[in-house]
Length: 231
Image (cartoon, rainbow, N blue to C red):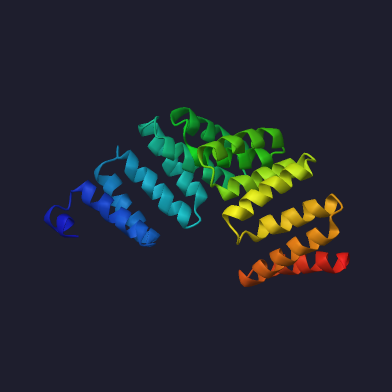
């Protein structure tokens, strides 16, 4: 605030204040500051990028994409902008467009764990489960404690009929995150499909308990309904 008072044309000060507001969850206030930074410096790629992040946080995915477009036009090597544009596209159901952006992010940063992970999730959503497994393999190799990557790789294996392999991945996800209700639930379903009824009920019961604790009423009822059918 003091820097802006001393120099109202100081784009960096507006940018930094916008970042501070964004960190504090004041996304609308952040956008106002990024607007001002951009008005003062229309070539400010980082300001477009961070304004896109604030818009995305407010649910304005299309507005975010427009800002990421501008950041990328100004800086074609901006891996984070490609990645976050991919996330926004996925949120709008454009998984193929998201994959293209993740491809670019990975080309710029081959160690980009989240880009491999999200590209795998997008491929799975499009039915390319083998491609998803390859990307999730890479994410896990880069981050062996990535519980969500094990969980989603388990889902992809299950979709391909590899129930035992799926169970192994759900085991690992649960070992890392013992509160992962979805992993318990899907492991229970996989065990049921392999004929392990009691083990399935045990996992589904644990999933139901966690869903209840986490306030996920619909999933709790879904788990309890399946348990009732098995008893």
